[in-house]
Amino acid sequence: MTDYELDAVDREILYALQEEARNLSSSEIAERTDASSSTVRKRIQRLESEGVIKGYSANIDYTKSGYPIRMLLYCTASIPERGDYIDDLLAISGVVSVQELVTGEQNLLVTAVVKNDREITPIAQEISDMGLTITDEVLVRSHQSTSFDEFSSE
Image (cartoon, rainbow, N blue to C red):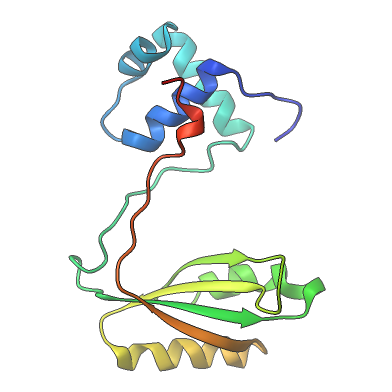
């Protein structure tokens, strides 16, 4: 973000969008923020242009969509190069997220979803072929997330 500071209206807009971006109109968000609908639309545009809102996505239940296995693959890369791997890792079929970690030996966390356990090995091989070391693999039983409550005034 540049010099733009979030105020209470911005935080309420972000909270509302986190909860229900698809179903809320700017008028409904305006009711929550005591701002006008046009102000909310302008604020959303500014939050997008400032990079605060990076995009919109669906929260998918991978198990119900036919991909019941979620794996966390902890990888090690050289510290100066770890960020350089992110786009290539995200291009691997089955990889849904990559996190750059800044403490410890494991400095990249790759999340992959697959239909069966046989599909993990090819993903791990692609990661290894990039020159990364996979130091741990963790099978996730369930995953839940929530809206960041610091954006809400309630």
